[in-house]
Length: 434
Image (cartoon, rainbow, N blue to C red):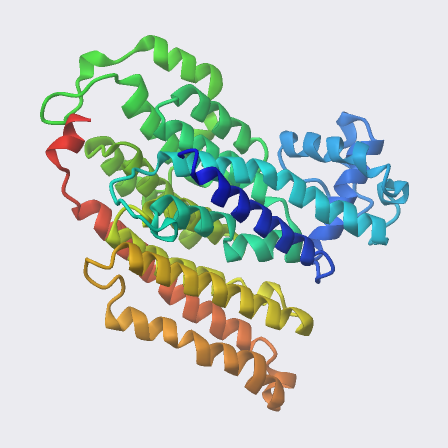
């Protein structure tokens, strides 16, 4: 990122941080108590008892690095309100506790902000623009820093996804910068913070093997087997958890892995495979949180500012994915907040990406446009009309059912469209050489 871009990037970062502060009094979910309990467990008990303490139903079930993260936070929390660190104080919520936990999320988002800055540096500057608002780096920064889903999940619903996605995006940036060992190290660390990121481990494993362990290609872009580096494999073996990478191999992600190996396209191909791994795991996982859709949306942001076809898929998936998060905020005071925030983010996403690719064909076809427009009457029915009907008493699950089914259709379509795009994409001579 050029020196001139530091001003607007800092403004975007400070602006979204201020918005996060305004959301402190908002509703929070049971995850608030989950993390309070983990603070108490890691602060009071020896390591040997962390994963066995069961006073609360919200037992510690994240990998060890996250447990150590909670332990570190607990040593700051004691200066806000020591009572929050008492294991028996179930559902304890003092004002100081709320402020600490909210600000801890905002503070740790510094890593996410830094990772976004590094990702912006990886975006090529082929699309010159005099107006800063039309620069791909500016658009990407807004799409990531002001991501609607991440805002409501972390700063209303309450979780620590920001700094975790920061680790993931920073690892992606390092791979794009060909700093492979750093990227591998960051992702290995991430896996030990939250196991859900193992969904995208196949993309990392194949990309590092293809781009780092094999050092050169033939003239036609095919693999030069003799370029295999034992030293590079050894170095990666010291960093990456091979068992984790090999343990996740459902057949649904194999086509994208195949393309990453036999049709290498550098960092772009890696990002496509990463998104497909995340989406495939989301689609076919046995127990998947709705919040896991962000694992596909955020890295897809990096592709959206580089090619019109990817921008169209991004607009489709991000709109559907963010709408599917609405049921997480079910209390009346948060209704206008979630609608307003999503409208602002969606309008900006459509306007900025359409402006960026204005010389190309429309980003969405008429069928996709109609599908997205139908989200408006669906929301009106679920939030306004249905609660006034007698069905609410006997069938309270209907709004959630309608939202889930309708969004599932869109996510499935976006997944298939991205897969077809990757499998049928032609590789340029320049890409083969790279």
